[in-house]
Length: 209
Ligand code: GDP
Ligand code: MG
Image 1 (cartoon, rainbow, N blue to C red):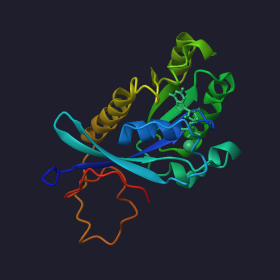
Image 2 (cartoon, helix red, strand yellow; image 1 turned 60 degrees about the vertical axis):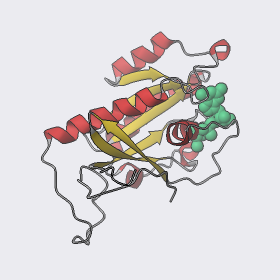
Image 3 (spheres, rainbow, N blue to C red; image 1 turned 45 degrees about the horizontal axis):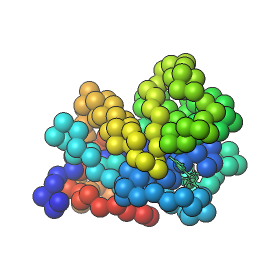
């Protein structure tokens, strides 16, 4: 792990209604674990995971909410500097699906214009409790011009695929732009380092802050 060189740091946000499985998706992706306990009381800021896109290491900094989504109080600060957004509903919860439109409005208002967005219908393992069809999910994604996956944090279905997909979309966007070389030892301006920056080195550990 130590000789792995991480070349890009990207900021991903998880948004969507409460209890759709945002925290569980992060846990499955970063630790390959799943818990049936609702974790909304735990104030997670972000977790890290390094992925490989066509031979380039991408360090994903994945931001969770700490329950603010219940009160519609996600701020512009939360969206600032984001490279990617994973917008999730539960396919067992019709209301969480209807709220996708509201979350898309928030993205439009608060996120950077070039942010990459994925729509996820989570809990695909609960087929017998399904309230939203795959076709409805696909139509919603098409309406908002984003890619769509059904996934399950419980079984792991499509979890690697969806995070790699958004990582790849972001990497392709970064590759088209001039990349700023960045040396943290020389720079005192750390505030802008969250996106589109080359890093001298970083490990692959999972981290909470
Ligand atoms: P959040 O509020 O969006 O972060 O939702 P959580 O990640 O806390 O999950 C809410 C509840 O849904 C918890 O009880 C989880 O165990 C459950 N859950 C999350 N993802 C899945 C899934 O893919 N399948 C099933 N069956 N349950 C899930
Ligand atoms: Mg949560």
